Image 1 (cartoon, rainbow, N blue to C red):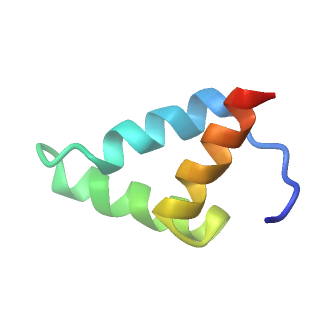
Image 2 (image 1 turned 90 degrees about the vertical axis):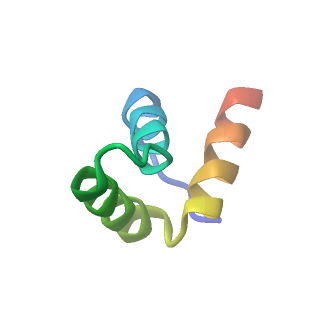
Length: 54
């Protein structure tokens, strides 16, 4: 995994929004953002968990 410095609060917010089906337009935008930065939602989740363990 790439070593990146990413704001954890932003990623946590993105993860909440990507799983929220009440706002499909926002969900689509956030999914695009996550995949642009991390490659996939799974990679973003892994990154988040790794950062919490530090």
